[in-house]
Amino acid sequence: MTTTHNITRTSTETGRARGVLTAPTLVAPRGRRRPGLITAGVGLVMLGALVAVWLVTAAGNRTPVVAVARDVPYGAVITAADLTRAEVSVDSSVATVPAGDAAGLVGKVAATDLVAGSLLAPGQVTTAGPPGPGEVLVPLAVAAKKVPAGGLVTGDRLLIVDTPPADADPPTGALHTIGVTVARVGAPDLNGVVVIDVVAQEGDGPGVAARAATGRFALVVQGHGATS
Image (cartoon, rainbow, N blue to C red; front, top):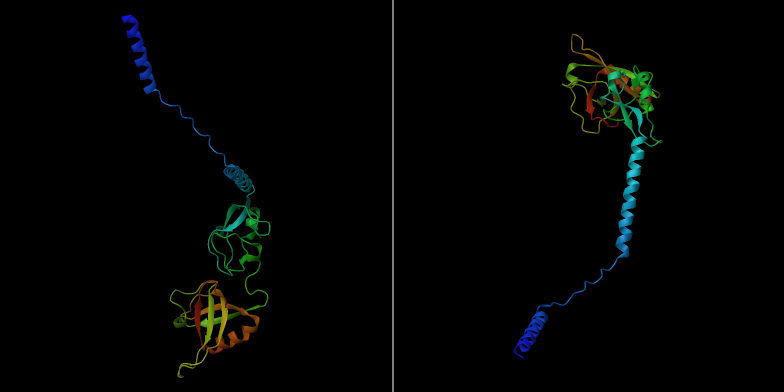
């Protein structure tokens, strides 16, 4: 009897101990699916794929064209060193010169200022130097004191400004000006006089010639890209 009683107590205590130590089982709730986020993720993946395809296609459609290697002023003769080759992807509406035609450009004349790093367009070169259609070439004999200290180069934009006689008072009203472009600059003579060939619009030619004859003018150098 004693043995049986002890076994019963031991079993009861063991059961209680097990009841205290046993923890309830927790069931994790199922996560909610968000269709909007899934759709957005799929869209981003598709967009990335399309961009990658476009980049690969654009890289494979590059065309070799002629680019400007260094600045070339208006009216200057083009040399091989002025040109370089560039492979670019451009729209068909953009006028370019095929790289294979570069040799044929040497010896031609810049019809406008050519900027280093830009793509060369067919209309930017011409077979003859200035003057072009609707333009005239006028030589100006300019005393050394009228020439900028830095000198003048082909392509410089100038304003020819009327000046009063040497013994007259400075003008107070608006001054008449004529815009021209330097085509060539000669070497100074023994007296420092430099002959500068300038290109003017056909209608301004007589006025420039008259001022060249009297010498009553001053030169104002304009910035590159300025319109005369």
